[in-house]
Image (cartoon, rainbow, N blue to C red; front, side, top):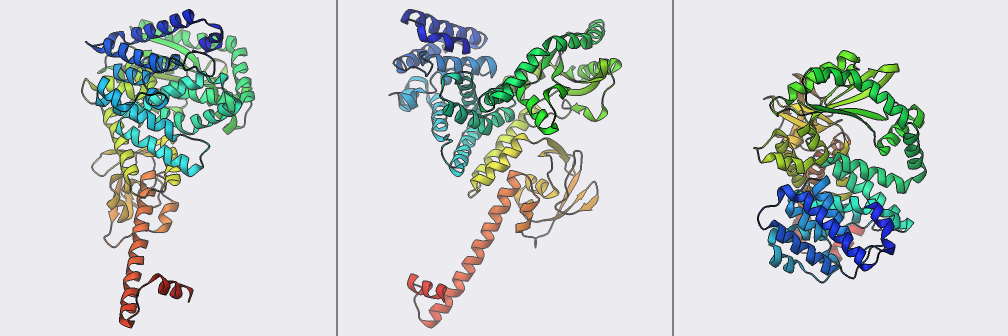
Length: 537
């Protein structure tokens, strides 16, 4: 799309029409496999409504506005992997907000389910306002999450909309560029991460960095460009023996090296305090296997064994997300091995199904869901349910909630087992009390301690992956203020605050009742005037 933006200023009407039709045909091609009877007509109708509604509007770059909804629809289909319904909603995502068309019109034309998604999208674009103070922003973010818990497609289309805006940001004013980029880092890239859209998340972060810290971005981009030749040579040398061996083993696979995202390289430079030249893992080797679902786990481990025949692995850098996938469904085997010339190299092994989930996240799950629910599916549903629970808690302080929630989005995960052997996923750093609240808020509120791997520990004990935890409760126990200092999950924090508020309210009610009795006994009315007198006294 970038290329188009730069050229559109001088297009005449004929050329613009051709360009719009070309984009529309590209969208049809992308949807080819998914079009059922009647879909094409609906898509055409949505396209016509959108063209008509936006006919006098142009983007900042000078191009016809309709190119934006078309581009968003293509991202939704090609890069996020959603289907026809989402493509239609993406085509119409701005019409209710920007034009005369109402939600009733949409309902009549396409049906209630479409109107509901478009309503969600309109609400979101109205809530995000970075000029607002942080509390308002946080409240807005909470509204976004409510729509997410309701229908995740709303957020996925919104992420696609944001990605296209970021790709065409150069025609905006500097102030707008900074505002939109910081909002992207604050809200949209964590959401893309949680939805398992790794490719989109990386691109959003890179583009945001390009506008917020152009010097840093340019330095790393130039560095990557200059070292490309050496890198390619090294990757080819590294890959060759593995490729030959896998070929002889009869595997159907692709293997390639890919540079790490600019943002993640910058993160390494920041956290490790090193210069670009000193970042050793500028790329990762990826091996993608074409193997049937029932054999993919076994095949991935076979490939691991081939890789480690040639290169020695670093034992503490093995990540097995095949046996226990991440909370957002990501599955892969990651290992870091010592390559030629004494360089550490990260190798990622996954099947083509896992690869699709890694790139398209949530949307790919729905595709595979048709074949029955997978363990990931239930994980994702569990996360959405967990989101609904936190959001429906009547008085979560929104700002705190947001901080905690952002932690939940990004932290590494640990896997904890109940006494019966059920597994729960918690953020790294979670304590025994977090675990109790994760199982049930009442269990958390009554918790006095826990047994971790049959050993008694205090509530504040930090859990490690693989721990088996039994919670010990007492009916006399009540949550206290200092609990907030050692719980880490958003759910535990919001429930503890809720209990503490309830407690204060009870004490206040008791006090009020005692005062009422005292005044009644003295024959004095409980008027605001008398209460003020008392308070001053």
